[in-house]
Length: 338
Image (tube, rainbow, N blue to C red):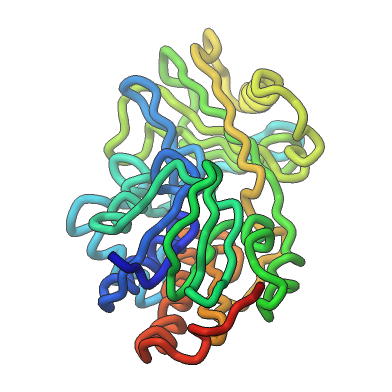
C-alpha cells in the first residue's frame, strides 16, 4: 500500500492536518515518538487519578475552532470549567479575580488528541531521526534503523527546534524555523489526602518560581481526590534545567504553601519537564508550505501558544498542501534535495 503524506508529531497541529487531509481522500501516516498522541494535551495517569500536566485549559474564538468545539461538547468530550481564580503578589497576598470560565477536555485533556487521531494511521514510539527527499519521494529514517517507504509529501508538526533539525537546507523557510527559540516549563503533579483550605481553583503568581497552580480535581469529570498541577515560570525553569525532579517538586510545592495551607503535605509529588513548552516570540506565519518540495511545517508556535493556535495552524497547512497534492504527481515528484 502506498501513502501520500507523512506527518511527524501527533499533537493538536499534526493530527488536525492529518485529519483534514485524510477527510479529503489522502492517505496519511502520523509518526509520534511518545507512547500515544497528545503533545502538550497529554495527561499523566496515576492509579485512579489523572493530571493535565500540559495544557491546563483552552478557549475558542475562531469560527472554525468553535465548530470543532461544539462537536466535542455535543459528544461529551469538552465541558466548561467555571473556576474561582486569584492572583498572588510577591508577598503572597491573594487578590480575588472572581469566577473565570474556560474549556477543558473531559474526563481529561488528552481526549482531544485521542479523538482527532481516531481512524488515523498513528505509529507511536517511533522517533524520526532524518527526513530526506529522494527521486522516489520523502523517506524517513527511524531511530531503530528502519527506513519508511516514500511519501509524496511531508508535514513536520513538532516544536520549532525539532522541526529545524529535520528540514533540508533547500527548504525556503528553514532559517525562519531555526530562528525560533523555545522556553521550558516544569510541571509538578501533587496529590493530597484531604482538600486544601482554599476557595480558589487556580492561582496565578506575579513573581517567583511558580507561574500558576491549578486544582486539577475542580475540572469537570475528574476524580474527587485532591490533586494540583503546579507550572513553573519559564525564566525559573531555564535557570534550573539541571535540578532533579525532587528538587523542582519541593520548591514548587513550597511556593504553593506560601499562599495555601498544605495541611499534612503532599502524599505524592512528581515532576515533568517540558523542555520546549512555548516559543519566546511566536511566529505569525500560521504555517509554512513549499509546493516544490511538498514540505510543510505547522504548530502552535506559528501563531501563539494555545490549543486553538495549534488547531488553526494544522488546518492552514492542510489547506495549502491540498492545492499541491490534489493535482496528482506534479513536477516536484522528480526533484531531490540530496
